Amino acid sequence: MKIALFHNPSAGERALDGNQLIRLFAAAQHDVLYVPTEQKGWESVFRNPLDQAVIAGGDGTVSRVAPWLAARKIPFCILPLGTANNCAKTLGQTHPVEVVVANLHSAAVRKVDLGLVTMPSEQQVFIESVGIGLLAQLMTEMREREKKKNSRNRLTPNQRLSDAVKHLRALTKKYPESMCELMLDDKILTGNFLLVEVANMGLIGPNLNLIPDVDPSDGALEVVWIDTDQRTEFREYLRELQGGIDLEPPIHATRCHQVLFREVNAPTHVDSRVFPTTPTPTVVRNQPGALDLLVISNQ
Image (tube, rainbow, N blue to C red; front, side):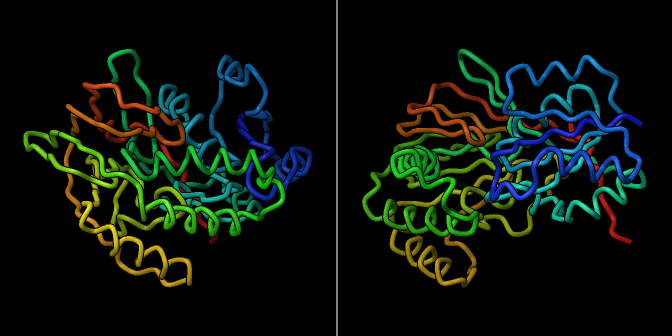
């Protein structure tokens, strides 16, 4: 059985390098094809017949690789090596590498949804969420801060998450409201919002547990939003989160199968990719059961 090992060596704390991973899989008699995703042309691995895949990295790596696996119906699991690991945590893919290596061939398969964003000029697949407003702005500013301070390699994942939550709380204080008009299936949602997230995963951004009871296999999209009159309440929620207290988030929420962005005056993110302005019309749809997820057991 041929296994593709997709690895982002710069993810998280860089606790495992490529040679260590290869040795661990080889010791368990796995036939592994190592694929470093930071190298140009990594997608050429799909010219080979592959039976399974392991994504060793964070949410960005999962987002890049998952559409390729879905298109080829290759079952995969996640080895969470990133900072937030929102996808891995939502999907219960938090086993250490030794457990993954020992139980890979006996793993069951679970169907998991993907999302599809259709813009006027392009289409893009997402696995985590599509968002308007605060979190899109946070992604842009955190990248600029880390580049300016060269802090990405100096901080641990927990420190980076804590710094992101702290910056999000400061950003929320003065972030301008965004006028949005959306259609959720056949219902119109219009108003001034701090953020809107169309989610496939329950954890979003810096591990914000916005949808505690999410089911990424239910064929639906979760839509959450924060009105401008919830600004103070959301900042208090973030303050408690900084102190290690995970309260129920102050949000509005509903479920649907399609979201149409008719008018949006705010930046948008599709997983980790940020668009400074939101092209409209943009349609967000669900692709039920597009992914084959390997469910690892440590029994």
